[in-house]
Image 1 (cartoon, helix red, strand yellow):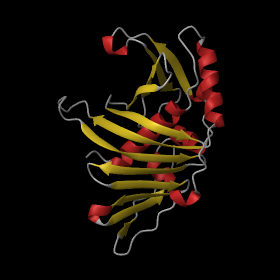
Image 2 (tube, rainbow, N blue to C red):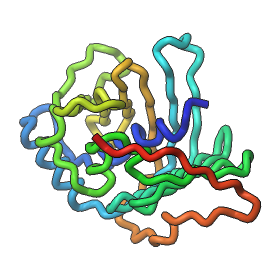
Image 3 (cartoon, rainbow, N blue to C red):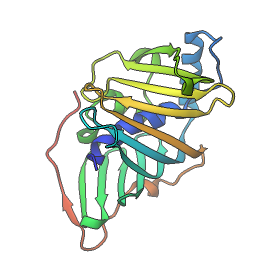
Length: 230
């Protein structure tokens, strides 16, 4: 499986952005749409959802798509918990300052600072509740001619400041229900991670204890080198 520690932060961006969409349509102005997304983002404190993740490197054949699924929890101030259940159990947990990447089968946990894993100030701002769409992204409405996109609202978000691991984000929303249909994150090499969410619950007062990890007895603790955000 592609390095889960790298993928998770790209996916985090998708999850956070796709959770903050308000109702709008193609008839609304782009500024109105962005303002509504920002207002929804500011109003959300925490949420949980089930997810199915698909990732593909452009150089691979179309058949080589890596899939995973599980449950994810988020809370502002950088708290998150990704519980991968299939195909391989893994957990990625952060209390906003420290990051744990736990691999039960290998009996190992990698512990690092959040800044080491994020590698992007935009990612950090999103997780900490400080992101501003007008300031941080160029947002466009996309008119797709593909049959499968009929009845979908499609937004493309590109960071205004070049990022080391993020090129653009595509959000597809059902035009009738305003629910997220599909989300994708592309890196600078056009590799992508697609994710679908379901059973999302917002502002449910998740406990802080959910975002702290205590290694079980016998688990090896690893510490990677420190890397500061650019």
